[in-house]
Image (tube, rainbow, N blue to C red; front, side):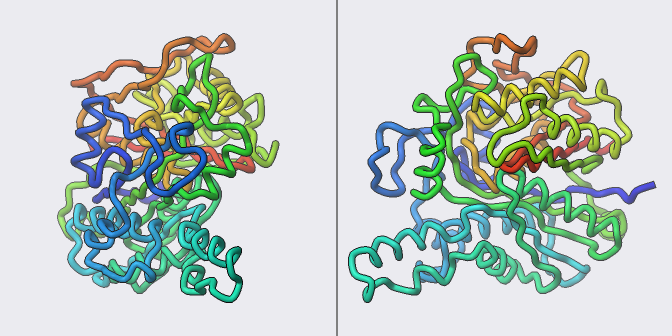
Length: 401
């Protein structure tokens, strides 16, 4: 029988809150974080909405106790804040008491500072400040978060597009099950940058009205930013320290349909395989799932592909919604952000609605949750994260019996 993986701590910073408490407050009052771009000047201001963390870099620095803006990217600072909250939530005072590791995911890395260097370099190649590109590598944020937390064991960075942080959680669980680690801080962090905004706009998959997942008139996603981390701990640690876990990671699955660089397979093959694998690992039947936090980006291709897979596996499809209507699509951090939200659903017995839905998709029979639902007994939540290149991941979180 596989070893059990417990979640003992969670931390988050996103467009709807700077910590778990404020994020939950926004969720239960149906408050979206989507709005106008304020982080940097761009031709898209007032045209393309985003979901920004409502803090400047100086404010983020102050929250982490740092002052040198040249040492830390926005991505790093977001990750430090969320990871620290997760560790504190788990009641950990010393990260060296057990074999511990950090698995952090990101797609953007230090792009926010690299863009500054690029602008300076174009104006005058001899004046481009190299200090602005030393943090470009995705691993830079992970190393700095590890140092901030006092983790000196296994440290690794994952980057599999929008499934990155879901995969970091899966990898962390595997490391615990194999006996290599006792405790893992796993999640991801990403910031909104010109690079991602212009890149996704070039793909013509940004919705000028804000994302409308699973709606017939959906026109694309809304970029977001933020960070979220979970503390995963083994049975041994939980029993030895007498901890009361928040939830259990009972199943997970990853599959790659390799259909296209950016599009999901029309038949939802990758999504179907990822969900099927997760269910098999958990030992649950499709009818045991109480709520699904769908990937639900709001793009024409993705929602249809995921919907077809859902209808193929579940009969009937459980209540589902896309919480990207609150947080935007936080790219490499999305899987961990939605993992935290899934755990909050279990803890508070609530389903958070798809805020922007109005018209059913003609190809599907299913409809998302559109009103807040309270006072439920939610035992099992399935959370999907699907990335470019067909890298699809599913996590199942369960209530502790």
